[in-house]
Length: 85
Image (spheres, one colour):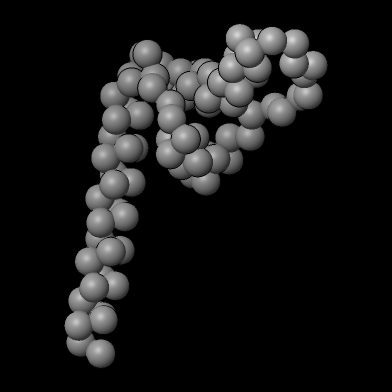
């Protein structure tokens, strides 16, 4: 299992240039509408599975943690610069 949320989807798009197909579908009911909205995340998870299987879940967790650390480092650098200026 590879959990994909909006943040992982954006990260995959940025790092791996994953571009899920966005074929237009006729929405008939709320259940179908929800399934259509999940399609890009499902396609991203499938891409991770093809790329890293059988370690796709672990790789996703490492990517997520690495991204969080990178965001925190950037925040700390900005804070340090604002203090010194």
